[in-house]
Each structure stands twice: as C-alpha cells, then as structure tokens.
Image 1: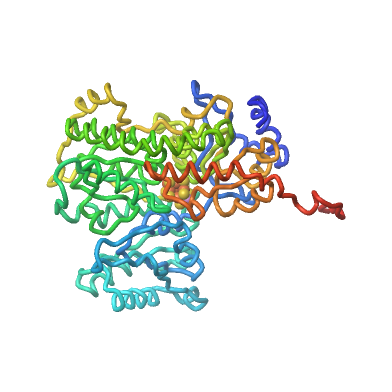
Image 2 (image 1 turned 180 degrees about the vertical axis):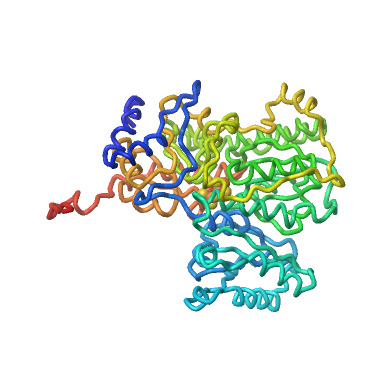
Length: 540
Ligand code: CFM
C-alpha cells in the first residue's frame, strides 16, 4: 500500500476517462473521508447507462433479500423463468425447521414462467393457475406474488389476483402481491421498501400470542442468515436468556412476523434494508429500536451490553458478562494466532448497503486497515449518519415507491419505556437509540468512500493501490483475482461462514488470514504479461 496521500489522486485519475457530463456526476459519488468533518456524498441515484454497476434490481431486493429467507411462505415469481431462477438461493440464506411438521419451501423455485402469449394477452389467468397449483401441492399458510418487469409493462394486476385468490380459498390462506418490478427504483433498496411495506400491511400485528419467555423479548431487524449467521446469533441470545421473537428475515417464519409486536425492543442490524420497519414498530406498538452490529466479536459484546443496559436487569447484565467472558477466550486465542499474518494489511470493501461498514469491525480486530469502501445502493444516511435525513431531497425515483401511513395501534400500543428513561440509560451506555452514525465517522481520514463503484473504477483502485484483500461479490470476483488480488465474497461468503457473533469471528479470522498470507496471487499473470502479443486498438 502506498502512502495515504495517493488516495486523494484517485478521483481525478478515474473520472478522466468519462465524458464531461458523466465525469461531473460520478465525481460527486467519490470522496476522501474526513471523520471530523463528514463530507457530503452523492448516493441513491440512477446509475448512468453504459457504466457497469455492481447493483441489482428492485425485484431482487424484494423477493430475494427480504422475503427470500422466510421458509413457510410460497414465493411465486410472476414473470419469465430467469428472474425466478437467478434469485433462487444464490445468496446462501439458510434456514432450519424446528420440527418435521414445519414447512420449508426455500428449496423450491416457484415461477409462472411467462411466455410470449402471456405478454401479448396478459398473464393473470396463468398466475391464478399457479396459485391454485401451489395450494393443491403445498397448502401453505401464505403466498407472496412478485412482479417482474414485464408484469408492470403489460399491466397485470397482481394485487387484484391476490385478493381474488384469497376469496377463492375463503381467506384461509394469506395471499398478497408486490409491485416490485425490476425497474421500479434505482436499485435493490426500492425493493426492500416495497417488501417491508407489505409485511407491515399483511402480517405484522396479526397474532397476539406471546410465545416463549415474557422477559427480555427482542426483534432482530435486518439479519438475513447468510451462511448461517442467524444460527450463531440465536445461539448467543439463547445462552444469555434473551427471547428472540422475530428476525426480519433470517431463519424466519410467517408467524414470527405476525407476533413481532409482542417484543419489547428492536435491534437494527442492516440499517439500509429495514430502518423504516423499526420506526413502524415504534409508532404502531411502542417498541423502541437501537442500532447494533453483530459482525465482529467486540461489536457482538457491545450489542449484548446494550440489550442488558436497556432491560436494566441485574441478572441479565451479569449473565451477558459471563457469556462474553466465556466466548472471548476462544476468540482471543484465534485472533492472537493470526495477528502476525494479518496486521498491517489493507482491505477494500464494496458491498450492498451495510456490510461495507459492518465488516470493517472484523477487519479492525485483525489489524487490517480499510482504505476504500462503499455501498452499491446505500443512501446518504448510511454513509453520513441519520442526522442528514432531513436534508435528503425526495426525487422522482423515491416518489415511485409507495409511502404508507403508519398509525398507532390503539389496542396494542404499549409504551415500553419513556423517552426520558431511554436518555438516562443512554448517558451511561451509548444505546444508539433511534440513531445510526453511518460508515464515514468510523473510517480513517483520507480513506476513499465511493458510492455505486463501477468496474472501471474498481480496475483503477486495484491498479493504483493493490490492496491485500478485496471484498465484493460474484460479478467482481474473477476479474479481481485475475489481477492478482484475493477476493472474499461478502454477499454469500463464498462457501464460508457463519461470520456473525463470536464463533463467526473465529471463522472469519481463519479464512482471511489464509487469504492474505498465501503467495499464490503473486503467481497470477495474464497471458499478455508473460509473452508478447499482437496489440489492438479500438477504431471508432
Ligand atoms: Fe442489508 Fe444484506 Fe447488505 Fe442488503 Fe444485499 Fe446481502 Fe448485501 Mo448482498 S440486506 S444491504 S440487499 S446486509 S444481499 S444480506 S450481502 S447486497 S450488504
């Protein structure tokens, strides 16, 4: 890694290749960080056509990300077969049933497989047929119908079909649709919002059953059980005696969403995909929310201490400390063993909307500096913190997403704790109640923060600064590796994980130390680097 000064040259070097107008626009999404005086970054705007982005689509954010990990809902993709197929399990969201009687539909891919004739004459009848088939074969508690691009273009009304089908089955099956056509928003982020609105309208608050312990009842928001993360988180909560009512949506079930309003605290992990659900739960039912990060052993310990502080219970406080002390023994031993190999290395992280921040904690624990990071589709508040929310301008793309009015549920609302009390606790332990400070305050001065990184920019980053490890997804993996830099997929963890919690941290330490200490990457040479080849130039 060259000196920090070089990082300031990146923006001008990289935008040089773009036409003027494009260069001007892209420049606003590339900043050198200053944690003392957070600079403004441009985010959540449409990618300029022609630029190769890392982003996915709105349908992916709705069907794949938010509803994908729930095991007992049949998720039907209304559209051409590819949309269903490519959003099927590639994210490695895992689940496990608690008994043989429980349903798990995650291993199936349901699609209406639209053909030319459905595009021309409409696909609603085919969709109804698909619902009937699903009911006949699986008799599920709930069915979700997801709109792909052609559905919006030809005007099939998935909501009407859902209503009709519910009637057909005497309202015994909860059937609802999502207007999550791929083009609907700027990115996956719009899809999260569409999905969460529907969860709120059709599921949350449907069942007042209080399952499990009446003490320390929490919801985990924005955790999706990639590579088994939720299993490790569940293990830790159970060990501490904390009752996990619902996770949105890792390892989740329909009834857990329906009972989420019986919890007394919400933890927000991925702020991007779910912060508005936390707000809805507070407005409707009086459940406060705090920001946590369970990626990183120290961060996990911090999160547990926050929960214990919130419940103000000596027994829980003592139990949490006991668990932390016990778990940290192995964590420390694993960390000590790899530190000589990892200390002083550099990393770059370019992932969706929160991991580019959360994983910096794990890298810090390994003594690895994150010199460049950014989100594919984060918003300004994910970078600069929630304090900038009032200054974010609403544009046509944000208006495209339904805003639902959330009201207090008079029957179920219960004030869990007064604002004064929360502030009092906050003075002793920083709960981050109703707050998220964003990625930038944590990153070092001068570090590069880049929104919606393009392939050209990624090539330049590697060429100019050669990090010891690059974290991104499958679209980047082999390009980066061919440049002689190891790439860790932080979306699906390659074949690794879990990386959350204490045991997850140990897995991560071991995997990363192996990746940064092998010499194999130095041997990677493209054919044209090894032997002379005929040169060619574009003629246009
Ligand atoms: Fe949240 Fe996610 Fe992420 Fe995300 Fe995603 Fe994901 Fe991600 Mo891939 S919900 S924003 S839309 S933490 S699928 S589990 S890894 S881009 S950083």
